[in-house]
Image (cartoon, rainbow, N blue to C red):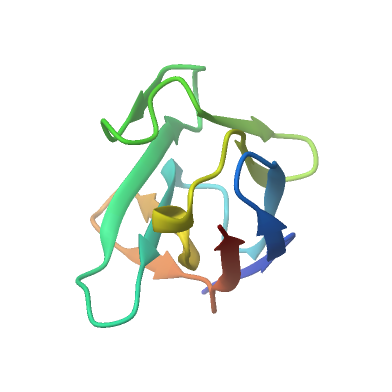
Length: 117
C-alpha cells in the first residue's frame, strides 16, 4: 500500500500562485510515475502533469504548459506542483497519483484549489 497526502491548496486571487505538495509513504520502492490530476465540480477528473521517478522527464496538459511546474524530491518522496498565473477555471480538487510497475496505482485524498476572479 502507498499513502499519499496532499497539501498546499487554498484560496487565491486570479494571477496568484500556489504550490501543492504530495508526500508518499509505504510501498514506494516500485513507483514508476507520479502525476497530478484535477476534478472540477460536475466535470471528469483530468490529467494535469506527470514526472517519472527514475528521471526528470515531465509532461503536461496543454492548459498547464508554461504555467505549472511539476517536480519531485526523491529523498523526501514528495511530489510538487508549482502553479503560477492561476485562473478561475483552475478551481478544482487536485489529486496526487502514483503508478507502479505491475500496473497498480494509488490516489491521494485531494486538496482544494479555489481561484477567485
